[in-house]
Length: 247
Image (cartoon, rainbow, N blue to C red; front, side):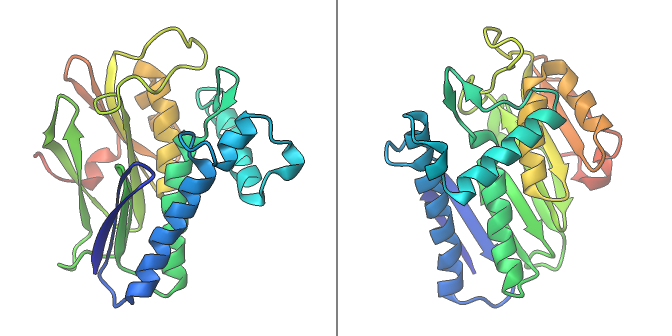
């Protein structure tokens, strides 16, 4: 069963190879809607918007406190390159998407499902096997031509996330030098044990510019693929182990 819905301003796709009821699948999309209602910086009624307008910390939900704690942990682990503070407001978007996909995957695992795929705006969790009995094939887009796939990787019980400016423009910044736009890196994809780890580290590594791929190389459990403004790809030492072909 496969279904796609527009939630959080992006297409979210869930494909389950195992037998699943329509209500169980709908519960996953209902969860994503609840995440959007709580964390969207575009909705004036969301909890994060209310916090940015002065909602006292004692009124914050446990989910909000948990996510903001994870953001602080990520800031520490990335030497400040992941920072949700911007112009006096909080924006945990660089972590929430991967975090929510990972939670949705856990919902399906808790139901006993083993073979499925969840994607939200390029953040992917791939569990088990695809309908053909193979690890899930995931494409990395050419940031200079989004209709072209430049690498295809195979994932099995892993997550992948890509950060870049080729679709949304300059929305990632270097917290250590906010005024300087990141123009030398066009996209950076990260593979990790789960999409939560892939997403938060992809965001931070992209903010590092040219040094991002070296950071991914040095961080245990991560592999990465970076395309710079000169159309040159650089990847970590273990990345080729995931590559299906030289598409």
